[in-house]
Length: 315
Length: 313
Image 1 (cartoon, rainbow over the protein chains, first blue to last red):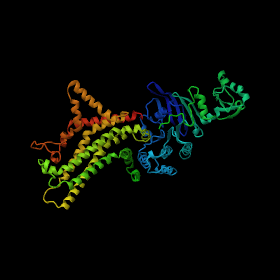
Image 2 (tube, helix red, strand yellow):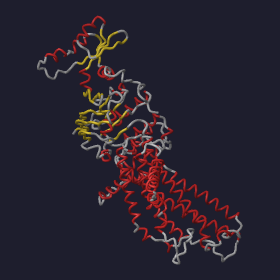
Image 3 (cartoon, each protein chain N blue to C red):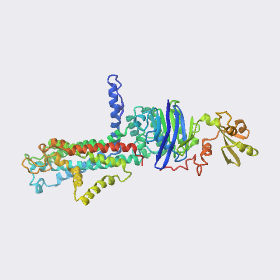
Image 4 (tube, each protein chain N blue to C red):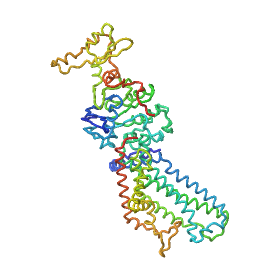
């Protein structure tokens, strides 16, 4: 059974169309990165999946309709909306008590175990904790819940690189077990490139890329081209060109030709991996590079900022 | 400290039913505790007022000359009412404080969780909007009345003990009655607290609904529209039905739930209301009570819906 299945998912806020007929299917046990510029519809999509917003179209999460069955769905689904939503007046011990009280699948000992590894004191109020500690606390609460789907919306926003690395490390080492599903959105895509099993780009309310990371690695190739090869390389129609240290860096889409039935245009577009590798130093591109290549042209500026600077960071 | 509460009974016999009941009530129980963690004024405010009142009472015991106590302005009243006076003032004061706390709590309850976006955390847990709204409604309707009652009784007992102690020390004349019929007074307090909670239920429901709907200025949104409507009615039709309706909802319970005149038709003094003057039958059969409760249910149902649909601020 698919963990999340959406067909023709649609949502408009007045005249603004946040989701424009999204189709997606996330199998159980995957770690999906949902990447998109600000206002692309990521959060709306997640809110629909979590039963926080109404939508048109068909949507099933773990076999349930999230809008009408949110409270039951939340037995199997956890989410971290962003780092700032834990109630600031609450004490750490109260947060543990409360979640233990209302969630039958919360393993308090496990949460305490996670907190043991941090500097968070049980008696502290959440408002007294640093942003990084609040995230650690939220993660400790969430990881101690035996859920089938974990949704993370910008979980590491505003955190320094150490906390971010720690966050994904604990997620992979202490939580993920190949039967759970994780959906994460972030602008800090470099952090998650090696975490994901699947990748989706969303723009203007539509899914513009949907592939597994194996596919990503076999399909896209980035080459720093030898200067004398540039003309030949450009002839192969890279999908993006940028300059780095005075050399051209080209990104190629090695389309897996699923239909070899000789449509001439498709054929001419097809690029051979060997051909490209011969042009210079080839490597798998970063997600950010592909994102810029695919969506950078349609936006005024670079939408992905891997330090999070371009984000409107809420106070 | 809560481990014993968390332990789900494992016995095979009847554990299914028990688990079902538990799974329905546990989120409600914990949500109410959560409200008390967040809003400590629910019990601190009446406690503080009780402490201040007690201090004043203590001072009055020593400083006011004995000859003046129970004399002067109150000569026209029956002696039992004069004795009951400090006690009834205490319970009225605490009821008033509880009313204010309940109003301001309700106006904030569904607003602050949207303001600080913590609603996204609460909604990430398997607690329904209905449970959440019920837990919040139970604060002014159940928890605050119980707290009022407990604090009032405790305060009365302490006052009585202090009074007795002072009398012992100063060895005033025996034979003179000095204590009001406190047990009867507590029963009346219990009755009055329950009556007020039931009568005011639609007000709290309305305040909760507004707090879930308005983006800010919940007090103004809750109070101004009804007042404006009443004023409009007066200006346009020169009538004041809405005005009297609103006033009736505020303090109409007094006339409905008590016989304010004794059997000789003499108005009774509110400092001591004998049990015989309570009119529970009349109160429970008054349409105003039941219409009010229907409105309270409608407002709460709307608040549940509002919590489901409204986004964080």
